[in-house]
Image (cartoon, rainbow, N blue to C red; front, side):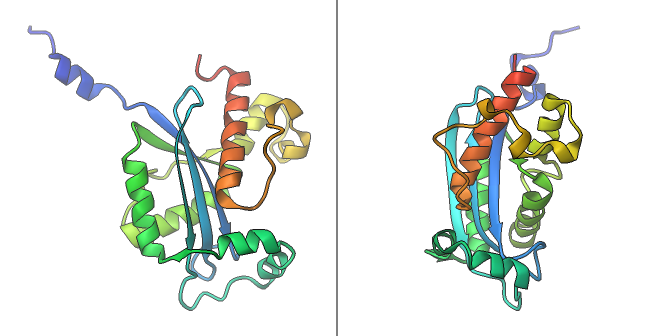
Amino acid sequence: MRAPSRVATLARMPKSEIYVSVDVEADGPIPGPCSMLSIGAAAYDRTGALLDTFEANLETLPDAPGDEKTLAWWKTQPEAWAACRANLRDPSEAMHDFARFLGALPGQPVFVAYPAGFDFTFVYWYLVRFTGQSPFSHSALDLKTLAMAAMKRPYREAVKRNMPRRWFSPERRHTHVALDDALEQGELFFAIARELKLFE
């Protein structure tokens, strides 16, 4: 029997994973009645090298009033609010650009967030609504779950105030600006991954 060709072997090899740390800012808890105000994404290879970033501020959805409690909270964050309301883009245009950003990465994108349940809900809804598909499929890597495994503590105790300070860069702070926070949590992901020896 003839050995498989190099081309056939390469075709069967899984694509490398690219870890895309994503943060969104929104005016409420769920998409549809509420809008994604901004999205920031930082893409890393398995060594933790930053490959590229994406950011966009989005116009709100029509007939989406937002959530009163969330909008009241935004009034306490004037700098972050101003940052996410500058240079607004049409959601369809922005999400098509985001899909192209993901498609240009040198591997299969893996969604990474803290907590994934919130950010992924918005990003998945917006991608499917405006582009018809999600390059992430249905999968999302939750940093709280990863931290739970590393800390050996219950999930609800796997919060940032309980995490070791060595996991955090002193140069980063949580600003509620989407790209800033995506970079912060991307660095957190690799700090936890190193302790778990995920990529050795």
